[in-house]
Length: 172
Image (cartoon, rainbow, N blue to C red; front, side):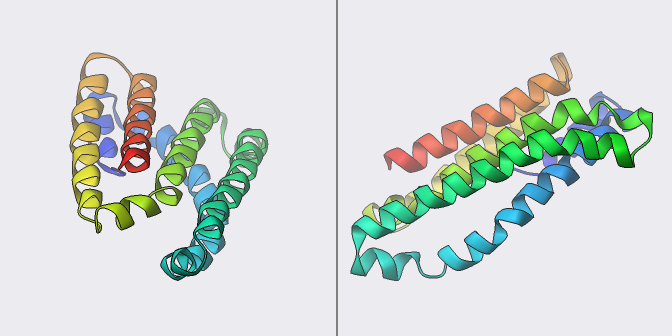
């Protein structure tokens, strides 16, 4: 669900819009990289922890979400200043895009951290279906939003898709 929007963005909005979007995505990527130590620690051991202590396996992802929220708030606060400091004026629109991408990152993180039950209840069979539905929905909504509206509508669509994905993982 990440990357296809670039093709639609350049087709419908042009390379200038893609450039400012790309800058914002690089800053949002910093948030993802800052969260990576938690992911690298948690994901390999989550099933073993679940087997030994289900409550702990339920609590740890909540700590991860708190950590992700701190990262997102920090990036939403500091990122625009860094963009102003490091980049030419032509990229200042990236400051408006960055908070929305941080929201996308956070909701995506919610679905990644809260999907453990999906793997246990359905023996992982629901995960590829949920991911496939989400990817198809993302492509369709990205295409429609950029063809008929604008970049911000696309961002709202991506937030919606990731929220639906998180809800599907949470309920399955």
